[in-house]
Amino acid sequence: MQLIDAFIDYVGPVRRRSERTQEIYRSAVSSFFAWYFSGYGSASGKTASDTEKTASAAGNGLMEIPEEDMPGILTLKTLRDWRHYLLTEKRYSARTVNQHLSAMSGFCHWLFHREVLQENPFDLMERGGHNAIEGVKLRDEKEKRVTFFSDEALERYLEETRSAADGTLLELYAGEERKEIYDRICRRMIISFLYGTALRRSELISLPLKAVDWKRKVLTVTGKGGKTRQLALTGPLLGELRRYREAVAAMVPSAGNGAEDPFFVTFSGRKLYPVYVDRAVKTELGGREDCPGHKSPHVLRHSLATELLKEGADIYSVGRYLGHSSIAATQIYTHGDIRQLKAVYEKSFPRAGKK
Image (cartoon, rainbow, N blue to C red; front, top):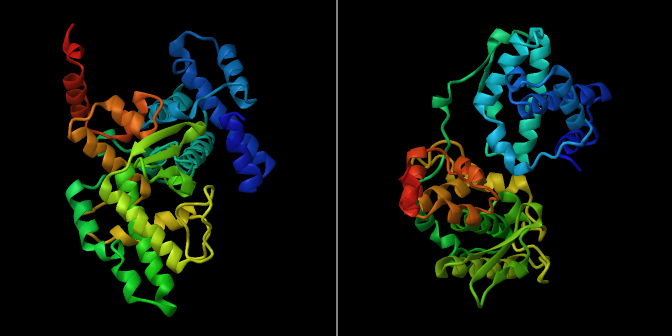
């Protein structure tokens, strides 16, 4: 199923929006991609009929739009240019432009929750009057800040909460406090694991027991599109994973132990769910002065990628580690310091600086 079709299925059957709303959303999102792929409208030299044909193809699910291309397409600059195009070339009313922006905001929100986008670029919008296009403005791109936590801060957190990983809590508490203690152990394991592996939230949730090869110290991850990658597990992290599963065995008798059963489970023995993982990160890191800003599983993924680049890892290796299919995605996920990326690139590939 094409990306736009999948989005409309979400808007309709899942979000229960009316057929009219679905039509508006499909038309708006399709028109955005038609404009984008035509070279930003009239600047491409295409005729209006060419653009309309492209929009029709997109709207009917005939246009293949790879998910990995979305971070590079849905940027603040692109959205600003598209809004300008709707206002000046299409001469749409403020109400129509806001309808288009609302549809694209929903599309970006959907991609964010599918972990295709690191963040919804519309979250960087300041909205004024509901129907006043003058009140809808994009912040300067210089204001955009991608959150990541320092290695020192995360190591400090892990040291301070070590009792939740070394079996101490498991020995001290029992009875009615078991759920509270198990959740503390699980939350701490989630932080340590996400920072140690840079997995996506969805990858952590779907991880089966067979993914961990205890003897070879290797983790096999199935990512987007069913693609698999293997990551090395360090001794300390492997030890924490082993103790976590010992806690599961002792405190969660309903948890399965088969190869396909989930590695991480709730106190009821079921597979983790997105809200549980999100809440774990916010609960454990919320309020810490050394971990400022937004708290989410993706920030931990982002933090490890940033640390790897700071330590001199080449961007292609980091991309493979993260499961990216293109270097463009790695540049966006590792945020921000283009000077750092350039330095790493030139260090790893000496010929890059030669003309």
